[in-house]
Amino acid sequence: MKHLIDPTDLTREETEEIIDLALDIIENREMYAESCKGKKLATLFYEPSTRTRLSFTAAMMELGGNVLGFSDAQSSSVSKGETVADTTKVIGCFADIIAMRHFEEGAALVSAINSRVPVINAGDGSHSHPTQTLTDLLTIRREIGRFDNITVGFCGDLRYGRTVHSLIKALSRYEGVKVVLISPEELRLPDYMKHEVCELNGMEYSEVSSMEEVMPDLDVLYMTRVQKERFHDLDEYERVKDSFILDADKMKLAAPHMRVLHPLPRVNEITVEVDADPRAAYFRQVENGKFVRMALIYSLLKWADHKDKETVLVPEGVITAGHVCANSRCISNMENVTPMFRESSDGSGILRCVYCESAVR
Ligand code: NCD
View 1 (cartoon, rainbow, N blue to C red):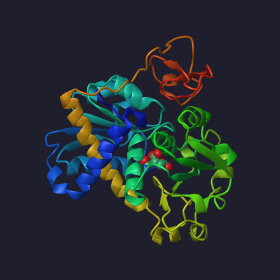
View 2 (cartoon, helix red, strand yellow; view 1 turned 30 degrees about the horizontal axis):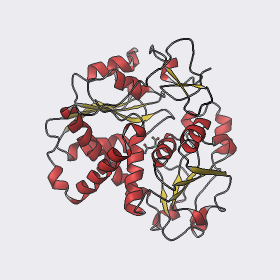
View 3 (cartoon, rainbow, N blue to C red; view 1 turned 60 degrees about the vertical axis):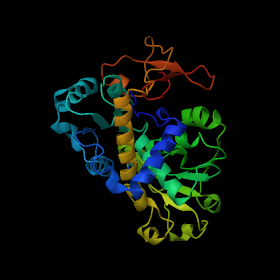
């Protein structure tokens, strides 16, 4: 069965097939109006969401399918202590496909391992958000026209921002992509991303601490919100929350073809005056999210019917005993799941948790 838990669960070719399908859906919407008739999508959202959940819902409705689910864990059996594994087994009796958002890293993987229907990760803690990545890629394709040979600035919370982690993984598979990381010291990209994603794939990256110095070089500026809910220490949040603000003056330094993306919601990191700049693509990006989710749901259901594709959920040679994941927000430390570790791919000998990619304690 094909699931989408991590952006690399889709090959580059499959990713582009989905983006091409989304472009076809945009051109020929009526042709797809009944293509998921009789199918049901369950949206299991354990964490707040506006865009992602409603965009999944709108996507399934536009494909002629139906949607069920919950948007608040307190109104589900989770409040009685039901595990992700059990909830998944139950929902698999009602729905043909699941989209799950969870505050624990690795929750979507646990769901997929226990599921008889395709599972889509709609965000697991600060770890991954592969459908936002598809949204971002479709936006880059429509706005810039290519994925190769682009310079992308990531600004804001690169530590906890799951959309950043997933998009960098996806971009690392293209040629000539340069990544500029703009963040305060405390919110820098995690080391595993730098070593195992950027360096291993030969993707050039640099870390800077001011936007002004890099604005003229960028094709895309990916702004992000500082993820207040992920901070262990709220004083630290207060110290860094206003670090980078994009305003009209800074936009003057950017190239005419540069585009500003943001997964939204925005807090104060982009001033409202920027919205009127034609280079501000974040509201167009939202609409792309619906089209690409239509393409994804359609493809996963088709692949499940044909039984011709498999997602490797548990890599070969995992170690299941003798270690504990260092991340207190990993599902392996929260629920009764089999711990799984793999050797990190950079040859350092570090063991990484299969659920959340953190090192062992
Ligand atoms: C993002 C998320 O949930 O990670 N939002 C989204 O899905 N569009 C970004 C965020 O919450 O800051």
